[in-house]
Image 1: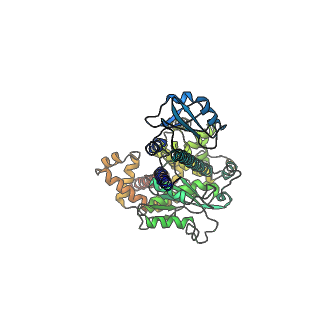
Image 2 (image 1 turned 60 degrees about the vertical axis):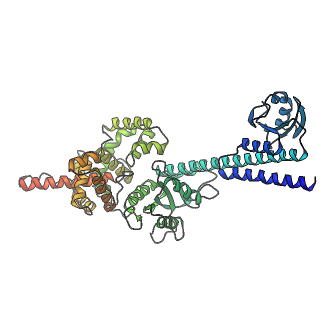
Image 3 (image 1 turned 45 degrees about the vertical axis):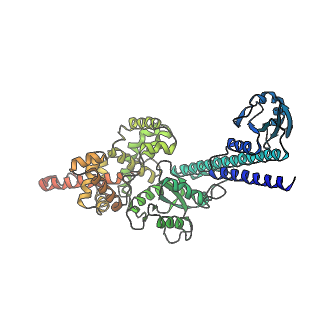
Length: 517
């Protein structure tokens, strides 16, 4: 080849590489037609990419004579099967060059046809173009495999989270046999709940992911229910100072992200054993509600004593088990959905469990029928939530009931319950308390609450957001804090009413002592 021919070929190869680079960088997958058209312009040949041994033309230049594919069918079959690598022939008075692409049968075949015999330089350019198409397809296959791996890794991480939320770390270990995440070797964890734009959480989880698909000793899971939440399970074995994260660990990295991004916020739970991940998640959700209005947008959960721990233990457990006993006859999935409904809207439950909303609604209707309660009513949900908390906190044999069963009002009419409610509501101003009471009275409908108070809906939501921060309870995102508000307001309202009655009728003061703590 002379100097002129070599320069021409080098120039063409530069152009081919530029086209390959353009396609590789755009991330939309290879477009063989663009390369074939480029090849037609440079080498004056018409080209087609035949995709399989059946002779299917995947892409071709506008002038390619499609009829020759049928004529060449036997030859194309041998090339596609791997029997031949390349072949030159004549068909319909055309010079034809065929070259198989790739390593695995059935292989696509690049077919170039021209009316005059192509030059060696043109044939070399056809071969180079075939190599570029092969490399672009391999890159696409690699990218597809990478995306498939990431999808499976996300599924496994989510399955581990679900098992831990159900209180079953042993099940999580069984699901990941052969590749058990280091998190499951830990004794305790904290949940860090990061609020950020949906696109950012995927990038953050990917940036911290290791080759096993996990995140070192921790685990980051994109919440399927709330698109702006990244759930981070962070081992707490080395946290000696109670700060919610190891020095230079994942927790500190999340704090730095919040410091650097004004749209981020972070809620951090207390330290919990693995089988109490659900409680840690709820604490993190409460902390996140408070974090949104704090200057640093990071908050650790500093919750007060839960209501279930201040109620008289034996009578409370009897009441709770009596209330929940009808659920024993229902399928496990129905009971699980009912539990999840206590801490998130039913649409979020559907996304969390990958079920249709109709399916979730059907299970909820079954639970409502068994309990004889309307779970769309916030007070009914608060009652069931308290019963579930009592039975979870008091694991043991069924207590004997040698006394008439108490009602929930009886249980809440104790001095310890009153003190709990007073402490819980103390941070609120009177206006916020009135808004909360009106909101609960209309089953958490902000528009109706605004109408009853004579203020705007936006003002109601502003009061609710302020109450979230003051109480450290999530009221508007997952709603996990509503139940405490319902019980605290009920206790104080009932106690105020009883005090008024006693003041007006002193002779009744000995009739409403209620059970003692």
